[in-house]
Image: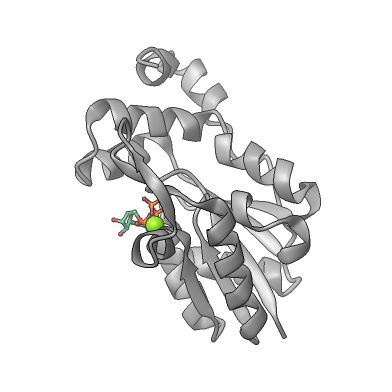
Length: 194
Ligand SMILES: Nc1ncnc2c1ncn2[C@@H]1O[C@H](COP(=O)(O)OP(=O)(O)OP(=O)(O)O)[C@@H](O)[C@H]1O
Ligand SMILES: [Mg+2]
């Protein structure tokens, strides 16, 4: 059965690691939107500020829909660009991966992100940017959150499979980084630099 699952979330939450594992556990394929843009030249230029390719969303959308059309089975679409290239009717579920802001900052700094860029991304995580984006595109019913903090890739993949197979409920509102950091008096550490 054809089934499209979207994995979205802030850079560094673990979308690609988990998508790869999930696709293999479900005998499906992993479609990385970032890799497609880079490898197939589906870009419309270079963003000078971010030093990153600007995806040609129309071309990317066509390309991904072609892959979905010709694939039978499970397709795991990896990347926050998903909301710009696939609509609600194209997908079964969108999973928004969430990660503890302190952990996320460590991942991004460890990856060589400049401090400012790392903090900008962590701020987006705290402010639920990807969650809002996913709900806006796919609607409440198809969007589920998964907190990946302190969990193994296997545990996260199992959690997702359990929702897809109907054994667990699709949940939202499972994390509230904003309230937690505010109550610790640490919110400004993350948001003041914006
Ligand atoms: N559950 C996890 N536990 C521990 N480390 C993890 C976990 N998930 C991912 N990682 C590590 O976190 C880092 C980021 O993971 P990954 O590259 O999969 O994120 P991403 O969301 O795809 O990022 P991007 O948006 O930049 O593509 C990697 O170093 C990965 O090994
Ligand atoms: Mg990735």
